[in-house]
Length: 84
Image (cartoon, rainbow, N blue to C red; front, top):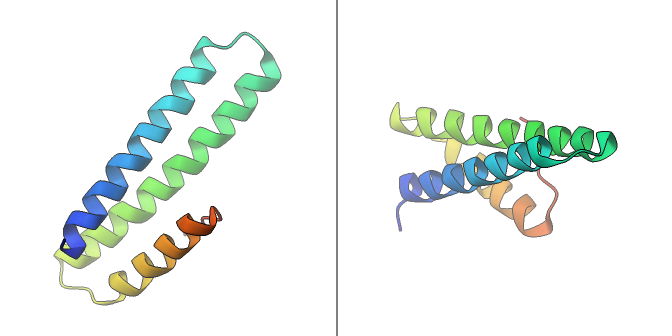
């Protein structure tokens, strides 16, 4: 699998998570739950934006993006995603 393909898969995964949390926020009536789901959606949005930046850098010929993807995948495995 190529680097570009990994980024596309990761972006799609983040998009699905973003949709999930947004849907959960809309469907929930408990204000605390809605707030939590909105925070989670914001986090997924940050992750997706970070991946989109990596993709754009890669498509423009940037080599730094590969290193950042490795860090992202390691963090994902540990379930601690860094902010970009």
